[in-house]
Length: 139
Ligand SMILES: [Zn+2]
Ligand SMILES: [Zn+2]
Picture 1 (tube, rainbow, N blue to C red):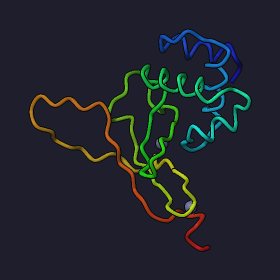
Picture 2: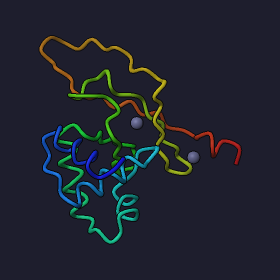
Picture 3: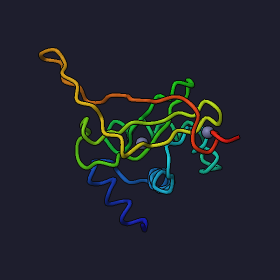
Picture 4: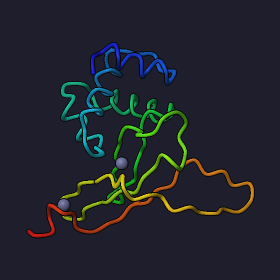
């Protein structure tokens, strides 16, 4: 994906493309699983953590990324795999490995349907399995 395609994605989401935003989005596109702010700041060195964080907040507000709480007090970020507005249908379950700290996307695990009380309009749901991942299971 070249820079002008990335710019286009940002514009479609109503985000003004700046050099930093393009870099952060490009990096997220290259990640096969959700990453933490610390991971990103290593990948984007020497960009400062505060600007990366602000960019992530903006991406999240504009439905470009999902923010995942992995249960280890750190947030993980990933590109939204779905199109358009965030909906429950474009979400998937995640797996947090308590040994290596990785978070995996379980795209094949469909979100269960919940029926909420009247007039509760959910925008997101967090389904996180915890345990030992396939890389760590035989160690
Ligand atoms: Zn693991
Ligand atoms: Zn995911």
